[in-house]
Image 1: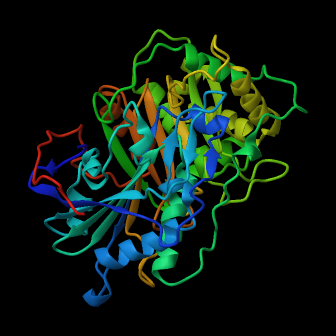
Image 2 (image 1 turned 180 degrees about the vertical axis):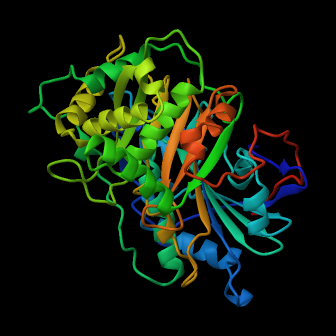
Amino acid sequence: MGDEGKTLKKLVVCPRAKLTVIPAVPGQLSKIHPLSLLDHMMGVHNLRIVFYYKTPRNKEEGLRHESLKEALSETLSSYPIVTGRLKGGNEEGRWEVQCNDAGVRVVEAKVEGTVEDWLERAEAADEEGLTYWEKMPEDPCFWSTFYVQLTQFEGGGFAIGLSCTHLSADPTSATLLIKAWSEIHRRKAISTPPFFHAYALSPNPQILTVHTPATHLLHSKLTAQNTPQNFGENYPSATFHFPPSSVRTLISKIEEETKLQVTPFEALAALFWVASTRSHHTDSYTESICLCTEFRRLLQVPLPQGYFGNALHFSEVSEKRANLARYNSGLALAARLIHEDQDKAKEEEIWSVINWLAARKSDSGRSSSPFPIYGPGLTVANFEGVMSYNAVFTEGDRPLHVSYRVEPVVGEGMVLVLPSDEGDFGRIVVVTLQGDRLSRLRKDKEVSGLGPKIPSNQKARPEMFHADPIKKKK
């Protein structure tokens, strides 16, 4: 039935019930929402997000399953795509969503201990136990594209897990869905309402160029012989917590060398690019990374922040391996290359990708199948703009921590740069690397010298077992 019963040594997540939450207000059942070309491009991947909350001082004000489900039902009235079901491809062979109010699958679970204890002891892949997921079946007409898990920590605390197909949403959209739910729970209006308009990213006939560095990168991903693997298998992961002072120190060091004004993402992407380069031995003359950037506000006519779907752009930066591997000078060089890539106008490249995807047809004239986008080289994603810590369900109680995972991991691995609960320049970096490269990267002196907090027992995926079976609620 999916992910049932997960264990972290003595910590066991026990699913108790599975049900469906439908919109409080019925929608237009005949409405069809076509997914965009960029949505279709992301179809190989899934997202898992976990929001952790402490128990308030007044436990009566804590999060309760019933009030959360009522608020979710009301929220879903504004999100017909989330409660719909995938419909066989249109005339171009792309998926559409039948907005039929079929609802979202919700799992209720519990776990012993406190949320603080979990965050201290949990290993990298254990968070799978806090998100429920069922793979897309051959016929997805009854398959929920979004799953929610409500986990109560018996010693205090709560976790809300969201999993979805990347086909339907990018991290920004998925986060805004949870944020909207939290606002409805507090009886507030949705501050960033969803904007559903896939045609906003239709092919642009005014831009004739389809051969750009971005389309060349996608073509190389298409032709790469990579087999997607489940998260955690041969890909150990670690979470690095960088306080604002550490990120400022890193930026100052880079700016002193480069005379450039770099962003936290550019600085951290450079840090982990050079550390990753030093973490493995290869005969390759050059090293490349793929940079993932959210572009809603980067277009000349920006998309609304609430645009629901995928608005991610991928670019590539390369340099001689020997130059990157040098301490100090390698970091400055990597930062300069990443800054130049992020600083240049991306409008033409974004539209060239959309036009390239539109032109990519099978022999039957239908859109070709999606392929792994994160990979085959190291992918560094800029998700620092997601408003995860604004998802406040109880007045005054921001999330303790929010984690993001993209699966499956392909190729060398990925690095996700995320906001932290400290705000300002504080960042969380989730690093997932192939083989034993992660253990070497953690010892890299430029990384460790910044003093990031890393849970000491983060290891590879632990052995899993089945606990209590899920009981369906009618």
